[in-house]
Image 1 (cartoon, rainbow, N blue to C red):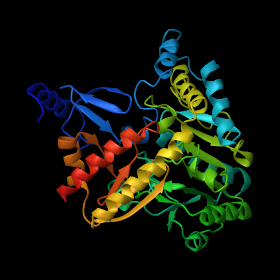
Image 2 (cartoon, rainbow, N blue to C red; image 1 turned 90 degrees about the vertical axis):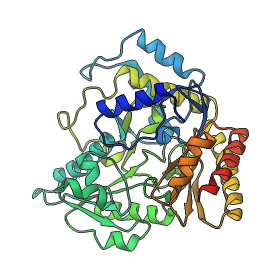
Image 3 (cartoon, helix red, strand yellow; image 1 turned 60 degrees about the horizontal axis):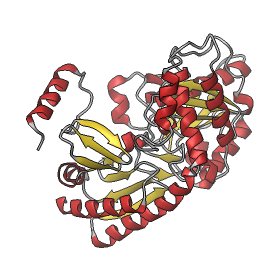
Image 4 (cartoon, rainbow, N blue to C red; image 1 turned 180 degrees about the vertical axis):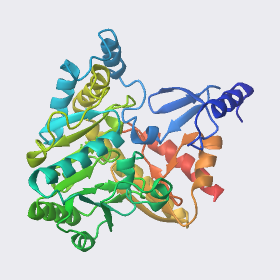
Length: 401
């Protein structure tokens, strides 16, 4: 039960903040490692990671120091000039992705906007009648809340209140290559897909599906976009989820764990996508500024230096086995799926009671991915002790069903 001070803070927030979120009734004050602490000092195990953002948890050695050092220099200079952190972060990002060019944004949704513009601009450049403008997106996908990103999000409930959205978007069935082929026409300019659907329920794309999309894009000269905003930056055990299949996109979006809490995203390109947009076609005031790029540079340095991917692979399998043991004792659990530390536990009943009990009684922070799917996306640096504690707490929460 929150104390009077916390209740007052929540009341003040409801008066001040524009209400588009139904927030949980807790005010967090600080974090340390993979734990959060509310204003009462109560400790919570974080298996939410700020929606897969805090890959390194809180106050990882070397991260805070890099941000503080940049604060002492300057935070912003604008993209009319070069800055060293953006060059360094860009070089590291291209090295781990195998892509060739990067544009830094403020968020994931802005990265998607840029990727969509590349697809349309590429088609505009090559077609004199400018008739190719359609994007093929996937059912149950999620790409963001801005008008462009929302237009390619495959959830009608999200789109409907804001229609008419950007025209020229059609939806195929995820992991069904024939449904994609049926939508390809002379109007098509690009295809966008999440290699692992996050909000859609933690569904990995089949390798053959991604290979088939690459073949279609090559044959029809389309721009293939992979949205790695949630499943990228080590979340699945590879730097980027598509690397498991070996299928490389023309454009890729990334955000979330790239900044470990500092707002930064990026779209990356290769080959024919590199020169689709020209100077003046796209821009951002804050994107790629020295402060956010210093954060990304620190994250990328730590990932390599401390072998974060090795921990994701080991702990991903360890957590998955723990969840499968819970499946054996809970008849409501129908499936456990996903890769690395991006896992989904599908129930035959809504999971909201589990999440509520987890927060209020067991002090573990969880999130869903749809009404009946529990999403497991902890910091990428969890240990076996953290995982064992999480499974113990989660088992206790099953009684809420």
